[in-house]
Each structure stands twice: as structure tokens, then as C-alpha cells.
Length: 280
Image (cartoon, rainbow, N blue to C red; front, side):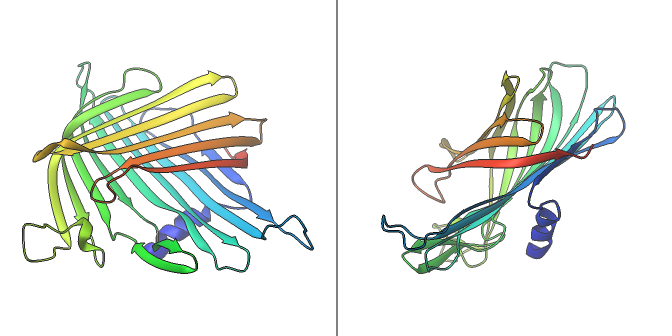
């Protein structure tokens, strides 16, 4: 499965980024895809001011498919990122490693809000490490841990470029080696699976700040019924600046707070320059 995911992402990526989309039409599938390979490199020779050679590459993909009829809306989206970096004579180290898939099915019933069913999957694409000098310690792997969340409730998406939904949710946590994420400390057994029930909220928006400047934001919240004072937070933001018809600059910021992973807030920021080509 892990290799299939890597092939899925790599199949869309060349030395440039690609994007394709179709015009919104009822009763047809509307695909979309944005992907890119970003590389930065520094080479020094007889450099008296100090420094080390370095190379960094990051592969990203945002793939979606949407189906709209007069009564139903079916949305699917995958966000994936994987990157590595090498400094001096050291070995390559993983610097980005994330997979997020979302599926939402909603039905129009003539109300201000529509009932929906949603499913999300979160995991790493491959093994993830923490580094202490040249020593790498594995701390995660594909579906170790893996988070699968189903939610049922109501969604509001009557405004252009804005949607929000709230529902009762069930979250399953799957692990293998790293069972600290799924273990129930109240039992003597170390569990590899954990089921939690609670409330999930997802809000997404886009703002066209200028003709060539677009900001997108997605905020996902989850809390458990037995700990309503503790919320899991995933806040994903991307600023896209269009330089011309072929070149975009992307600034991404991801904030995560999940107590079972870390007692403090996790943050990731990335600045990327890429070439975009519209196929359709």
C-alpha cells in the first residue's frame, strides 16, 4: 500500500508542477490536481566564508474529484507531501512526510444546512524519524499511527469559497510498533487499536486578496465526549502568489495540536517556487 501511494504521487510529478480542472457541470465527475517537485541546492568549493554543501527536495500533491447532481454532492481530496534534505557529507533526512485524504457526501434537502457523511484519513507516507546529529530514531510509519475519522451531521456551503460542517464523529487509531498513540493506560494490555467518539468540525475558505494572490485555509477540530475540554486541531493555510501564467509562489503554514502526539503545538512552514501548466 505504501508503494502504491508513492507511485500515485510521483506519477503526477515531473520537474515542473501540473494542474488540471474541468468546468463545474452537473452529473459529471470534476477532477483536479496540483502537484510539484521543488529542489534547492548549494555547492561550495574552496569557500573561505564557511558553510556546507546542501540539497533539499520536496514532492507535493493535491488531488481531488467532485461529483455534483441536483440533490447530491460527493467531494474527494488527497493532500500529500514528502521531502528529504542532505547537508554536507551527512545522509539524506526526511523533512516532510504527510498524507491526508477527505471524502464528504452531502444531500440538498432545501434547508440552510444539508446533512452529510464524511470520512478522513491521516498518516505518514513512509517511515518518519527524529534526528540527533547523525542518529535517526524512527517515530512513525505508514498507518503507525493512522487516524480514520467518520462524521455525520450538517454542512453549510451556500457561500462561494466557504463551507463549514459540524457532526458527531468516531475516530479509529491504528498502530503497530508505536502503540503509545493507541494504548489505553487504564488497562494492563498495550492496545494496537483505539476507538474514540466525539464531535468534529471542519471549516474551509478561500479569499482572493488580489488578482494574483489567493489565500486558502482549512481548520479541523475534534474533541472526545469523555474529554470535551481537549481539542485536536489541524489548521492548514496556503498563500498562492501568481507571478505569471506559468510561475507560482506558494507559502504554506500547518499548525497541529494533538495531545497524544505532543504536549505542545506542532508547526510546519514551507516556501515554494514552482512552474504550473494547465492541461485542461
